[in-house]
Image (cartoon, rainbow, N blue to C red):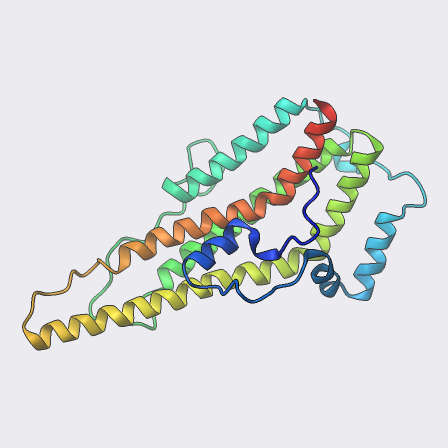
Length: 253
């Protein structure tokens, strides 16, 4: 794999760029380099576990669940990863494709009950976003494990990379879930601000006897923003799997 620059920052993912472009994240604040930041996230037990992975005393044993797995070519594995990624993209953009095994998660209707209640209006969208997050997490965890299985049947270097990736997934999955869970809260905050502005314009229009405010003009950009955020999150969640695939292809091409 192409090594990341030493000064690479954590906010360069598609998701962080999206949040910054939408004004929901301040990227002017230095977030620190990846290495030291990652070190801060590890407790001493996790550090010991990671040290054992990086300094194996004996050759790693092949995981039992990969022993009966067919060995794929680089092209075949790439096609499989691309297929799963495309299915997830389609699920977010227009609904899960037939035969994908993914649950269809539809965007809530573009209608809100009147009078609008700021305390409950976002709830259908919160459920929509959370359902897609759960589906992405499950599908990508399975895909990542499958790609690791292919690495585990390859050279000793790729076997060690697969073991290292499994360790990182185990160590960081809980923190990842917490951080990604904050995205929906940021979107909810933006939703509440837009709704508040809409209600104010509506009230001002009624008081002045002006042309009524379009009822859904404020909502449509937010709905598209939800899909855009999910697509950016999908890209971010896929990065470890794509890194494994790149290493596999580099050795098998």
